[in-house]
Image (cartoon, rainbow, N blue to C red; front, top):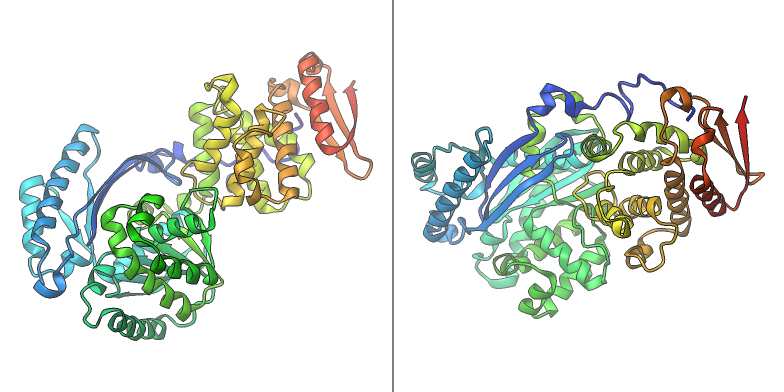
Length: 515
C-alpha cells in the first residue's frame, strides 16, 4: 500500500503518537468521581483512552437531598441517610477496584443547607471521603468542561440543571467564558407558591436576569443534567425516533414546544414506563419542562444538543494536560480500541492510506469518519462470523463515543457493517436508514467494501510500498496497482471483493502489476 499519502511522522495529525501511551495520560486511565447532587448521588469510574474515557463503572442512587429545603433550610433527613450509605458503598467499591482516592464533589443542596458542614463531617468520619463543595459558578465551569470533553472546540451556551439549581456557561474556541448560577432547579420550583402561574412568573423573572448577565446567545444550546435527558427521551418517544442514544441528540425550538405540550397532556405514569424514566425523575420533569420552554424562548438558540457529559467528565477534563485536551476524542478512542483489540494494531493507518484515493473530495468531517472506520475495521474479529457485521454496526451506533452526531454514528456503523457483509438488507441498519442521506449511504457502502478488500492485503512495509488504489471518477475506472511482492495476496477471494467494490462505484476495473 502506497505510503506517500500521509507523512510517517505526523505529531499533530489524527495518526500522530497515541497519547494514551503517555505516562501523563495513563495516570488518568482509571479515575473515580462522586457527584453529590440535590437529587442524586452518583459514582462514575472512568477507564480506557483518557481523551474519550469508557465508563468502567456507573452507579446512581436517587436521594433527593434537596427535597424540602425551601421550607426547612436543611438537607432531607431520609435523603441524607441514603446518601451516607451510598458513599460508604462507593468507598468500599473503590477500595475493591484499587482506585486512586475518589474525587467527591457536592453542589447546590450541600452548599446551601444549614447542616451541610455537619453532613461533610459525618461523611469524612464514616468513610474517610473529603467532600469538595463547589460554588454555582464553579459548577457551571466544570459542566461546561464536560461538554468540551465530548465537543472540543465547540461554541454556544451550556445549561446544566440539577435538583436545586440551574447553571449557565458560555463556551467558545474550547474555552469557558461567562457563567452564572440560578435557583431554577425543579426541587425548588416544586415549592414555589401560586401553582403554575406562580412558577411561570418566577421563571420569567429569573430568566430575565440570566440573559442580562450572559448576553445574547444565538449559537448551540447544550443541555446537561438528568431532567433534560428525561425530556429528550420523551421527545424521542413522541417522534418515534429510532436511535435511543441521548448523547448528541438534537432538538429545536419547535420540538421543545411540542414535547412540553405532550408532557402536559400525557398520563405521567404511562409516559414514565414508556420512556424508561425513574419515578423520582419523572416527578420533576413537568417543572423542568417549564424551565426549558422559557429558556429556549429567551435565548433562541440555533439548535439544541443533549450532552451526556457534565460535571463528572468536567472533573476528568480538569486533570488532562492541554496536549490531550486538543486531541479528537473519536480518533483517540478508536486508536485505543485498535491497540487493545485488533489482530494487527497499526494496520488501520496503512488501510487509511490505501482507501484515501476513493475519497479525494472528502471534507474534514468525513475524513475523520474514514479514519475512525479504518482504525475500528478489525476490532470485532472475535465475534462469531455470522454476527460480526451486526456487532460492528451496534458498536458504532450505540457505543459511548464522543464527537459523533447521530448521522455520523450510522455512517460509521454502516461502513463497518459492509466491512464484513456485502448486503445490508435485513440488518439493523434498516431501522436507522432514515437518519442517513442516500449519498451518505452510498459513501458508507463504498468505504466498507474498500475496507473489506483492503483487509486482505496484510503485508510487510516492503511489499506494501507501491500497492495502491487509483480511482478515475470521470472515466469510472478503478485501478489496482500491485507490486511483484503483493501479487500472491491477490487471490480469488480478494479479487471477488475488489469486483464488489467496483460494482458499488459503478466502475470498470483494471489490475496493473508494477515491474
